[in-house]
Length: 295
Image (cartoon, rainbow, N blue to C red; front, side, top):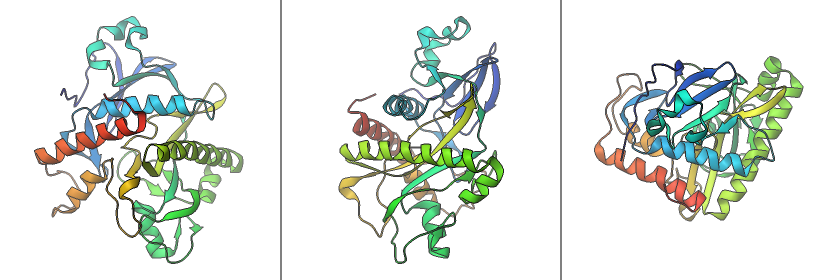
């Protein structure tokens, strides 16, 4: 298995290196997004890469974009490297299967999170307040419990450190009531479509986060979509409320790191080879179960 930790294309302008993706400016309207095999947890990039991870993230994003294309437009131009501009095609070997050519968009400065189950930061907040992002929930819910209906829980986008959960009202103060309502509607519509489909494949999508942007006078979906990095995928066969279910996402890595005496600040302890191997297996299995195909 090949592993890509960082890309370098000297004649293409590098805009930024995120926790996982390297983003290049092809021209004023077009970006090249490359998903590396880097992995982060607790908002820190780990020293190990996860083989095949970038390919899984890209392939799943392309799969979901096709499934939800009638709900919301997106930024994808093509992921076929033979159709990339000539200066990019000489890097085809590195780009194949882990890159997308996309429209530039003015990104909305909020993560748009949909939750169908009580997990992660939502579960922690509920335990303290009985609510998530200002949304009151019934008393007595257990960890991983299915919510009465999916909820929209935005978060601020942090360049560094943790994203911060905010209420819909706080988001509306920043963006306006109408744009916020539209983003909520799109977020829940995409989540519902995806969760209903995943259920037929034996997967529960507990929660997920989306990013939206403005391009050409419309709201479009950008970045990764419904991947093991941006979502919690649980096997339906092993699901039971009251516990943290096994997962096909990077929760496996978080759970391992929680067993260490580490303060969640750099430097990060390296992952053992077995954890790296199992993480690759989980990502590949998520793709296989959801799409019926193997990478």
